Length: 444
Image (cartoon, rainbow, N blue to C red; front, side, top):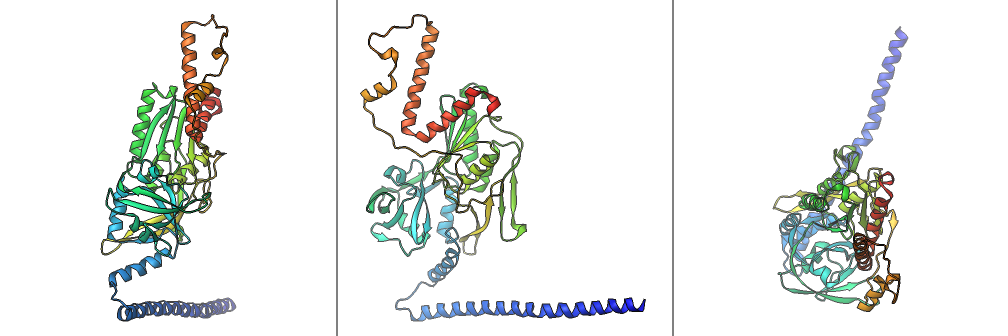
């Protein structure tokens, strides 16, 4: 018994010695790290004072500190940045769907400003700016060496004023200028229309109007075709949609899923993660869907496409998406400014991160440039059949209703051919839904 007690005491004593031996260096290491941080902060203060006292010109102290803060954030990744009060206000207005400018989403790559996408029906799109363009100069002033916010500031200006941007485009031999007239940008988050009996939902951005616009537009189209039983399916067009509010991407995805995970976010610490799940109810009760994506589809668009792909709820058609799989939190700061900080990565339901990879489409379909056809060429393409031949025998067995049905089918075929010429990817998506509907519900 005494031996047991002694052994236990010895073990406890050994444990005390061991913990002391381990804890000592750890405490010293932590103190050394704190000391190093304080030394660096002292260094920053010393540099600031020397600039303020000795720089060749008098400096704006507030601007100097702001530049230091922004430099600290932009050194982390392309999406972290400081938002001074004016930019913070502009960002809040933009999420409500109206702001002034050119109508382009931009990012920064190796010091260059790259266009993620021009927004629908904006001056930039009308002037011919394309996703993937690099903007090198604004009104002759080089952007290299500026922060993204400084470059964006150069592109801002009064509504109605003119701006000349210099663009480098893949496939173009030389940089070229594009002249754009600034305008107030009013984004329509969702545009809806019918192509035959297929519902088209063009989502241009994810702001606080996106889900209400989508819901109302879809309900109107269902009513127009006489009920869900008359609808072939839905095409969700996310091409050149640079993203927006995570909450709206979740609501849009939830509208077509009955259950399961939509997206999860994971931060540096396990407790920082979130998981978002679908609620019961599918607005189209399982009808087939196609989602269109391209290189301008980013962030929230990739959340939607990735969730539908993992749940096999939709066929993803187009080209590889942008690959922005990080989540930024906007944190208000004293003085009415804020900082945008990357705080987590998001993951699709299957657990994959699309950061720097993007969402690969199920069916790769490149867009084709429209072909200009003369009236004679259109007539030749759309009407080339037996009945169009001179002297051809007419089918006298057809009733008036059958003749009318044939004429309607011919009109649909002509409309489809025109759409295929104007927007090949969209026409391809509609063909998929039409084929699935023709084969019946058992294959959906």
